[in-house]
Length: 102
Image (tube, rainbow, N blue to C red):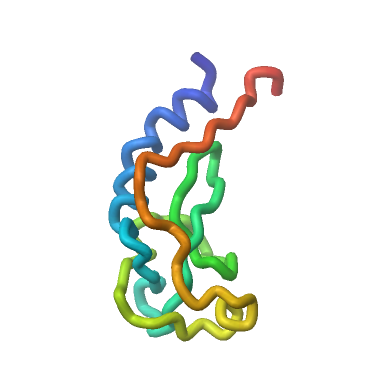
């Protein structure tokens, strides 16, 4: 098993927990901000994790900083892109990334 596979294995449970927090089309906000984003699944190190639909930078990726909420989307970037609600409904999503040849 290579380093990437070990990393994906170590991160698969936290990524699943993050997806479970947003199950049911919940919107999200970054801890310390009152801006509410639509949630979209995003590829991260070969896994799918919920993130801001507008792809706003978070400074670092810490799954615990992105919180679920039932509040409506207030992010100007999300709204101008037509993202007025989250598309993620939950479930056992997992994206695989084959880096064996790298």
